[in-house]
Image (cartoon, rainbow, N blue to C red; front, side, top):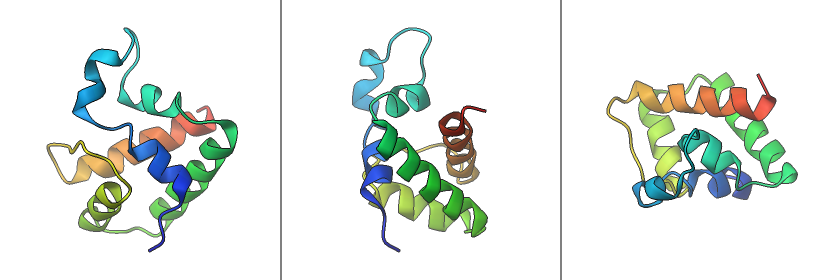
Length: 94
């Protein structure tokens, strides 16, 4: 699967090293989205929407997550899907 640059640009902000840089009242999702321009947001939104529509397994989503450049994982395999859904909702302004 080809991972678009827009999604990699988002995923790269998921790293433990930035935790102290995240402003109070924000979380990793808001922080990562805040580093994208409008074009990148639209590209990431389209890609995540497509991933979730494919009903990929948790393991496939984990593989894509780390191949995109994320350096932070989550406790449960299902958490990756939850985070992607949350990112998608926020990108859409839900």
